Image (tube, rainbow, N blue to C red):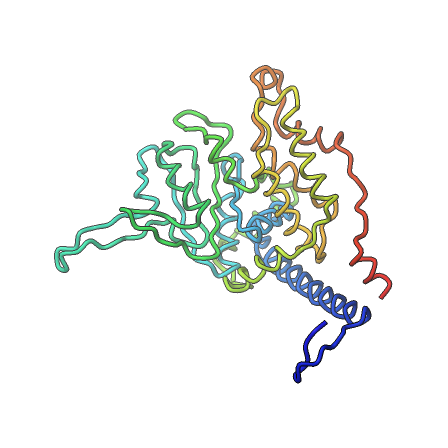
Length: 355
């Protein structure tokens, strides 16, 4: 019911309301189609550099659209750094790389104030974290004090130096890498910092045919040097806002909560995933659905992302680690044992179906 120009009351019939809802749904579907097309363009551009890793590139896009951060854990030479560079160039975003070492100081990350003798004032010199896509290379080689310098930036998207809080550019994403094989001279990431990463992934070695293609493409020059942007920061921000409108049925939310809760009661688990893990899986599922062109989440979206979103948040008991159990095995077991309830169609969905 709305009020007319002369103060008269106009009643809106059920058909009018249904038409408006149907139009709203068509607009949402068009927005998801746009995200899908943009995501495919960016992924195809990145895959000119990262050959044969479609799933890993897709997960990086999921983390970006959710305004999350990415942890890449793999051996050297598998394309971790190139993935970050190619993503930044494809999106026309500013990119900075921080090589973490034991002697790196927090101010080397955030920046510091330097006294200018000409102006007789302190001037702030921003550090490499003041960028849209930041690569924290070998993050586990820095001391915990330096690692913690990223915490405020990752969670609050601003940093405080000399008592002054400064906002970071948007979009903002940290892509951190670490070598899981070599532990000498490293400082394992504490659980509080691991929990800040929305997704963790492993690149893995390429297939033989893909590796031959890499050799051919880098015969004369590296393909990352010839990448051209296929999107910009404004488009990324618009997609990040649109992703939050993806519909998640209460049954899907319940499945996510039960899945995460199951990690807390497993006999081999010392500490299960936190509510931040539930939220990460929820938002990642929204972005995954949008990249597929859907404006709603299905259980397969949750299953596809569960290991990447939850495994690094699960801490095993010592006895389980000795037996060779890994956190991803726990998540896989949960996916096999936790049942999925069939979503019930809402009254709104039924009305759109009749229309």
